[in-house]
Amino acid sequence: MAWTDYIDDYCERTEPGLLAEPLNALSNVAFLVAALALWLAVRRTAPARPGSLYALAVLLALIGLGSGAFHTVATGWAQFLDVFFIAVFIHVYVVCFLHWFYGVRWTPAWLGAPAFAAFNALMGMITGGEGSASYLPALIGLAAFTIALSASRDRALVRYRIWFGAATATFALSLLLRSVDLSVCPTFTPGTHFLWHTLNACVLYLVGRAAVVRAREV
Image (cartoon, rainbow, N blue to C red; front, top):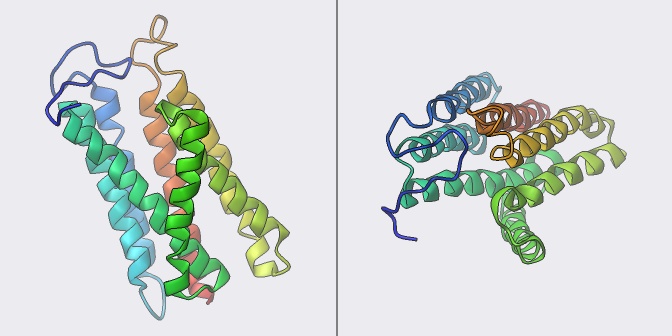
């Protein structure tokens, strides 16, 4: 697919044009609101303001901008930005999770990124890695984080199972809504992809805010 190829993957889009997906485009504001809220939460982190947590807020904003570009111009390069910033956020968050929740030093914690990339590639070979299936590794990862925290002997960690349990459940619902977008077209012409954006913004804020709260403890 060329960078400038027109892409029509969603129920709401019925023709080319910047305003052909109004709900899908506008719902990306949720990512920007979540990014601002996370940034302000990091600013209140004392005594330090960890750069890694600011990075999560910036990446969250970039997800909104990348997705917003894709759902307006609907071209190959915009689709790349859409998935690229999501992938970067996920891999950076794996590193932050290992460091802030389990005290792994930054250098070895960065090994978590290629480890997740390998898991993602393996899942892609199993599922085909197309459409909503490409997000199954992220769902499994969230569930694994929840289980690991729940099983911890450290009571300070166990309480975060609520944060990650809520994030896992919300992400599962958002993934379902993403999956049925085209199926509901005959009865609900806007589709459900805009709800995927809205709920995803909540998920990313939840996990980001959990890291901020944890950083205040360590």
